[in-house]
Structures are given as structure tokens and as C-alpha cells.
Image (tube, rainbow, N blue to C red):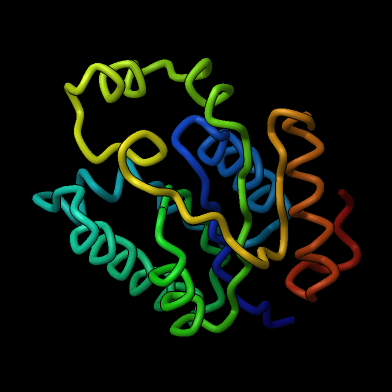
Amino acid sequence: MERRGVTIWLTGLSGAGKSTITHVLGKKLSDGGYSVEVLDGDIVRTNLTKGLGFSKEDRDTNIRRIGFVASLLTRHGVMVLVSAISPYRESRDEVRTRIGNFVEVFVNAPLDVCENRDVKGLYKRARSGEIKSFTGIDDPYECPLNPEIECRTDLESLEESVNKIWQKLREMGYLSKSIAV
């Protein structure tokens, strides 16, 4: 059976839980026999988009580049998990249009929860002025208006968030009905 590729785009503030969900979901999909690639924002910035800053233009360029790679993989039947803050709605909508098979997951947690989870100390550095244009502090994050899935990581467990995405992918026809939750 030929499987449809899809890009599952996890967006949300730093510390909301995007990478954690991506890791667990990616393993579950791989264990289910699916071809999976992960495009994590931090890793992509180190390897594919090195040299870009954090201006709106550079952030949009970053998202377009991630979207381009995701579209190629999706076209070839891969389940692509993108974990990137992607703060601007317009750039997310642009990549959605380019890719077609696209599922937006809003990984939602209040700013104070994200700050409390911040193991890298980025929020503290942003609040002290050491980091400028930090999303959620002095640069905006535009929440998705109609995401296919919203994971409230402050209110639900990791397992609940992953299962919520899994069920939606199944409903949308991206997962075989024979593979268990």
C-alpha cells in the first residue's frame, strides 16, 4: 500500500513542548513502519539556515526553507515532523499552501509555564535584554487561528498530546487503521 506523505507542523513558544512531542511521535510513527523525518528548528538553524538572524524577514526565510525541504519529503511519501516556533501566521500559511498535505499542531502553553520550563535560560536572558527580538517577550507570536490540533501541554500529559495528534492523523487518512494508538 502506498502511503501519503504529510507535514505535521508543530508551532508554539519556546518551551511549549514541540520537540518533546516530536520525539515521542516520531518514534511511534517509525515503530509503526512509517518513513519519518524530523526537521527541528534548532537543528535546522545550525545546519540549513545558519547565518540567518531573528528579524521578521530572516524568520520568514527560515520557515520558507524548512517548508521547501518538508514539501520535497512529503511529496515522496515521508511523514515530516517540523518542530519550529514559526511565530508568524502568514509564513505558516504560505508553507501550508506550498505543501498541501499539511497538519498544523498548535503546541500551546502559557508564557509563564514556558518560562518555568526553560532549561536553556533563554527567557531570562531575553527579559534582561541580553537577547533581543525573542518570541513571546519583545517579538510577537501569532497563534494559529484554525489549527487541526491544539495540544495544551500545561493541561494534558505528553501521552495525551501524542495520542491526540495520532488520532487526528488517522481521521485524516494518513495512518492505517490497523496500527494501534
